[in-house]
Image (cartoon, rainbow, N blue to C red):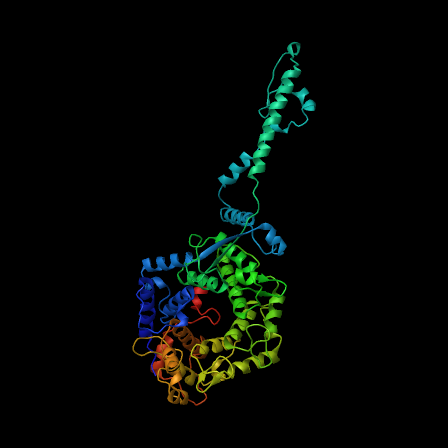
Length: 523
């Protein structure tokens, strides 16, 4: 079996051209894995970078105009909502939120810190505008009145009167008139300041699956995909996405937090209807906060991104089942996808000693590893007990094990796993399908009912193509890539990966086991 990286690269490129030009293939069977716009963009762009390790940036293969179009399409998915201050306090979320005033203060502080050696003219001007004339300070006019006729020059006094002692003028009418003028002037200033007094505004921003805002509301999955795309496009500067917007996305994620039960909701609607938690939303929320924090750190902004870690961990562990896997929510069936989300969420919630929950619970960790290894069945990998194998679970299962610092060569015959993935690739057009391209089994031969289903399963799509490439990269770098040791490892059957296949695998970029992105993009 060979790995046709050039074909897969063309497959991803053709997907971009087809989507941007609206030239869809009508004859092609529809596939549910192409329905999420932002997620699909992430799969394709990340796949383009992973198939060639010599390509560090997308502008090396995509034209600048295409990158700008993709960037604009992503930012068009950003939606803004204003939340009333009373609502924030009723939900007891004020300790997590940044109001517009808080964000302005933070921005000003960072700007002043970055320009510490320069004179801040705006600040000086503001301080000058706030200087109050001595006239406005004469509240007790009768006590101050006797100093008006003093013989001295004072640039700060409101009146300088120099009369000989023999010609002193004491005019009560003039004094009362001056008092009235001063009083009225101060009254006007007070009213203006009262009108200008700003009420705290709480703004949240999140990304919807596509730019049709009237159809879709922002959610945590699309928000994570959008932030990942900005990393891939190298659009994470202040001009591309401002600190203000990032902090408002931070507000959005924490607005979805159910503090009492310790999980994150999917969207604003799920809060309204009080849906239960979901492990996918937990992972997407924590990952989004982590990536936001990476960007803010580069701008010398430090915030506490994870509050109530213990409650998050408690909810995640409640989803741990007796069979050793994690479920979507407490009490449901164990699944490889949700297990991936749980393991990586716990990794994001490490303590001050850089250890996660399983570092202190070795028995549960062994049970979890055993359950993941049991997903290997019939020369493939399935997602849960009693289900057929699916090529995308090669990523969910193997990346979970790598995230737990396990050596794959000690758990599997890696050659069989690689061959299973390669059997799913389309050797003519590129891309990967859900099942093998030439699968023959008893069910297919004796039941015509499954004929159409199998045709769809053999159609390539961006989802399975991307995660197949990621799984191959994960296997290669976990087994072979050792900086201090160059010798190859021997597998169970004492066979080595063929040389021609090793050369192809070595051309893949090293993928991050949690975020399915090139590792260097997160550096």
